[in-house]
Length: 222
Image (cartoon, rainbow, N blue to C red):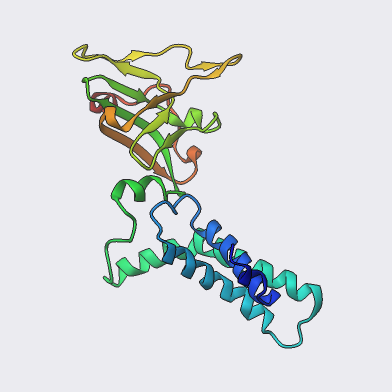
């Protein structure tokens, strides 16, 4: 670390420190494609919130310092929870842009998703076999449940049904849930995946009734 940073006034150190922490919150899980310039200007943008509080007249002492430290964090939470999605919807509504700055569609669907809940997963492998979790909602509270969608296209999920190549039917896997040993999660590397289908619901996992088996039309679609 450059010693000159430590010699800066404490107000600037506070703005930079809390600004960087706020940047981490606002971009949590979405920073792997960011460049150094993104980190720098993101830190400065949120740090301006702290600087603005410190510049308020008639505001002194520890309350001023605490408020300045919390301001960037609150701004980051507002951005992550509401403003980011609102800006994307506004850009589409006014035909400013129908795209966004995420690296890929897979990245947008998986890494930035926080509103749509996974209900069903079907993975087609390169050898012709198929792995399926027919009701992912039952694993919502399982470890890493209901699934882990990797940024590189891999997946870890709870396989309840599987079809071997040319078998023509799904076989239910027994023992996926075990009260003593826990739930059995399966990892599938991206190199083995030919196609992946994921059903989602807009809202909490309980917004639609869970069924022991999917409807016949869904079963045939699998």
